[in-house]
Image (cartoon, rainbow, N blue to C red):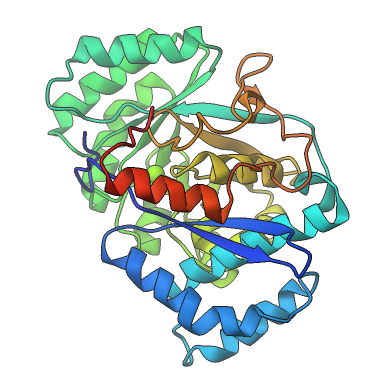
Length: 365
Ligand SMILES: [Mg+2]
């Protein structure tokens, strides 16, 4: 399987556990892979953990400032920010568990259900256009009213055919979104958008290079399709820059990349001040999905949460309600303390690692 940026057959995930003196465990997750996984683990265990140990978990901003102060000026980004995100998520889960409330209520509940869309439409070696059509029909039959597919991995003509087939399979009322994972330059993105427009595309995600904010802005203004960007951005200042340049209509963030819930709330507030909606990227494990649902349920200007149909690791261990669709595409935050991923303990991860090392683990997803 592949997307426009990479082919993959495995995934590495880092979980962060913060434990109180009386053994309450907060769990956070980090989106990281290849060499960066080892770097993140080392940063957390070697550099960050000593700064968290002994602190009051309710003082998250203070803990974050201590960690931020550790970094040489300007380096609190990349894997450093990924690591901070995981600690932040674990601390919020921990706080909610200590207070015995669901995470979304601690954050200030806004809704008890969240719109999710089916994210799939990847490329595959033997995947035909008919396979894509039946994949999309399957999503709609299971209740979704929004479908996202990848573009940018094949010549334009082939991707336009994939878009047309997706629209046809999804029907006229379904949201259809396209995600280029930064595959295009500006002329290429505008060219694709011009021809894709007739299929009523809800958003054009990550059309050009991550660092090309001006390019995103041009595509957003001229393509006729609203831009959604950017799941890999970190820190509220980077998002402010994106918004200042009106480089997206949908502000796209990932809680285990952007800096955690604390940073995500600030990003959502900056977006709200500009009358923009946010959407949450979630392409890792069920823990991030559940956390994202809680977060989205506490934010008034959230458009959607990504309901990934490929990257939903460990969903077979979580309560069924975690990803269960209601009234079509909606998912409710779990009515449990924290984000509700009780199965995720250090012992669980140890035994999972053992199974993986012995070749016994086979994820259903
Ligand atoms: Mg994306």
